[in-house]
Image (cartoon, rainbow over all chains, first blue to last red; front, side, top):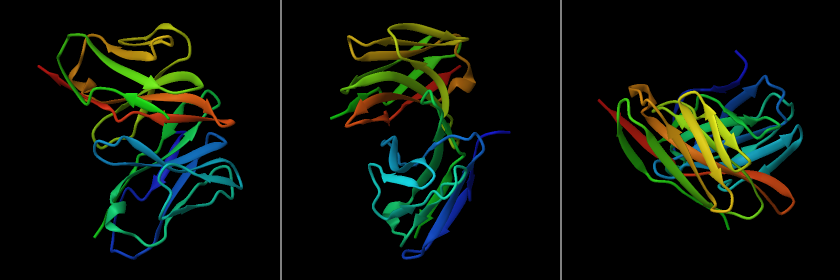
Length: 111
Length: 112
């Protein structure tokens, strides 16, 4: 099925560890983005990309890095995990009519 | 700045009709979208309104009034599987680019 694939689905990290959340889409969407979702706060934009080689910061970028070497892939890297980064992370791509397709999410716990 | 307001929780009876409201404040408004998210799942697209009026898709309808900065999602013939969170999202144009901002969501509980 076409869509957005995120891995891993679950992850536990120790404070200070780094990791990369993977995201891939096969719909040839130029726009991709990463959100975090915390209780009562909706979806907050971390970073986004409007095409290969172009990335920009969203609302809550601190502690995260992204890169976009291909249209399909948009990984999110946590540089040095902190308990405040415990959250559910969603990758999404967007079509030309601004409709979003979300991945299944990554539940991250930092201890 | 930008803001969206929607109720945090709504409870409705199976078979009934429920309306979930969304009010927004933004400049450069383009349109209003709605997404559904079941517990533990990903948000999925339901509808998009760029013009005033009602858009119907099966049991779900979405309404927009640009002059009132207001929209709603209407769910008819409620089923237990409709228990989920519903997010409104505003598409707007600002500072030379378009963006989409999501509301904090309304948790709908359908009871027998």
